[in-house]
Amino acid sequence: MNQSNPELIFNQQLADEIVRVWQQDNRRWLDFDDGLIQSEIDLNRPEYLPLVLNRAMLAGIIFVERPQRVLLAGTGGGATARYFSSRFPDVYGEAVEKSDTVIQLAQKYFNFPNTKNWQLISGDIVDYVEQCQQQYDLIIIDIAVNQKTPKWIIERQFLQQCRSILTAQGEVVFNLLVDDANDFMHYLSAIRDSFDRRTVCLSLPNYRNTVVMAFNQKPAVLIEDITAQLPDLEVLWGLELTTFYQQMLIDNPKNSGVF
Image 1 (cartoon, helix red, strand yellow):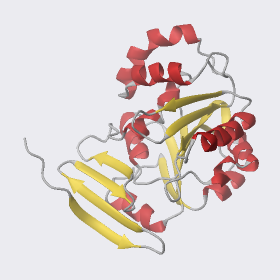
Image 2 (tube, rainbow, N blue to C red):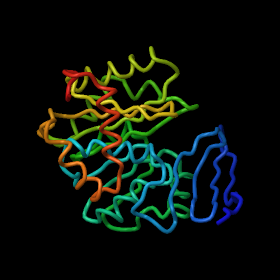
Image 3 (cartoon, helix red, strand yellow):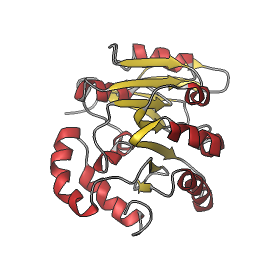
């Protein structure tokens, strides 16, 4: 069956960027006119995440229990919140977004959950984390400025504050988008220093992004038990966890913190 042409359904010039929403058949996505898709949903499948990056950022479930409370830093269209609300409706979450325009788009075009379990908060994630009294099992930090992860994300104070609002078995997940290998090592070293080297990297073939998972404590799951658990986890989460795990084995040397 032939696909229709992409249709531009929202286009607005902000102070320093253009915000656009596109639709093609059941696909709807958000971009900033920079060649990167910021968020994407399948209108008919709220329980599915079309972007491999969004799916990869949940791969830490291989090592920890299902989260009960989630914090999203950098909401985009809110695809991850929509996914959790559909697949795990008992999960609570907050999504913090600095742009009021993006917040409006998440609600109007991307079906951000309109339930008591999820809140969409207008604010700066640095301020939110500093003042937060809540504890989270999962914090997802997906923020880029000019196609690069800003350096304030790896400042020691911010990383320590993120860790301070984690539950004992909680994790923080970073989407790192950097210029080169030296930059990546600088970012990774800062994260590892703040999390006692308990990290797992997951590279994505054909993408500049690398997902870094940082754990508050060493995961309780035994590495030798993971492979047997993956099929059930894949069904529960709808994620290609076996593929992600095989890539982790390549990306993370033994005794690197979790492996």
